[in-house]
Image (cartoon, rainbow, N blue to C red):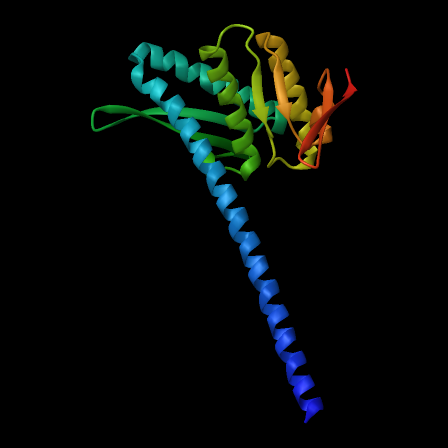
Length: 213
């Protein structure tokens, strides 16, 4: 009798542990999806801000802005991913109101595939587009020489592209005369920096150490 109860208790415990493990797994997936949804919402809001600029401008100004945005973002994409990728901003008329659609044009064996930005080749492309647009907005709206703060840029990029992104940031900083303050966990990205600091948190206290520069 005791052996039977012990065996049943072991089975119940095993089932409990299995279900608890599954619950924790689902909870982690839910947190990840919620985090990614928040990121997509932020990127959508950023694209909408740029679209508002197009809507407020005259037709001639819209065309100049469109060409500049396309050129800057395309240059950024090619600096990271190489040739064969292009950013497009298309102004369309909807119910008498100018709207702008953003897309990525990729070259696959001579075929040009157009994809909405948020659906294009994973989060890495969205990261680079978002970064380029942030820099454009910062340069256009902030005082000259004001620093640009970037939190985890390129966090969805594959490892092989991190150094290219770092070199892109360095080139943009040089061209615009802006200081870029970048928060990152990626050591490959920090290799392009002129000065690197590490922040450690212990017992609720942050300590900053200068690594180089």
